[in-house]
Length: 156
Image (cartoon, rainbow, N blue to C red; front, side, top):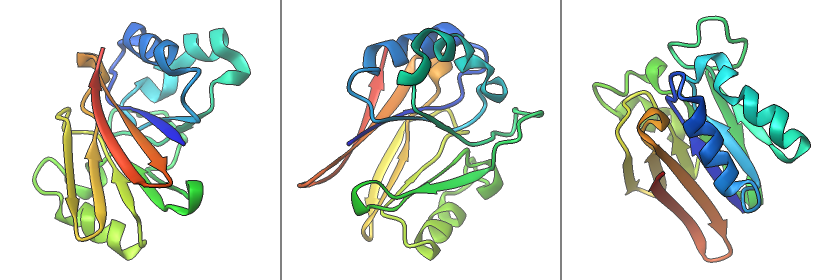
């Protein structure tokens, strides 16, 4: 199973479209981590790809009119994945609040944005992953395989 993760596009609709276009055939889900203009950065892709685009989103600190939640969980292939924008956990200062919440939820993976910086760490059984900012052409993938979980930072 592959999750393609996009965060912080801040109006760069072309970058979002290009990422989706590259992965529409191999992604099981696209995850938007917020600051994508309340989801508007996905509007062209939603029209173009129609039912092929399986999108899950959360609200970022710049998504003022969004009705999306600030945190979500999914459980693909028996793995618990928590994702959020990160601002409510103050990730620009420390990842500790985020990690504590992920552990409280018994997550296998926590995915966040907000800092615009790609990041990956595996700590105490938890994959901690930030794909970086789509406005800079960065995105990420989380592959869940029979052999384990792989987090990949990528760039357009």
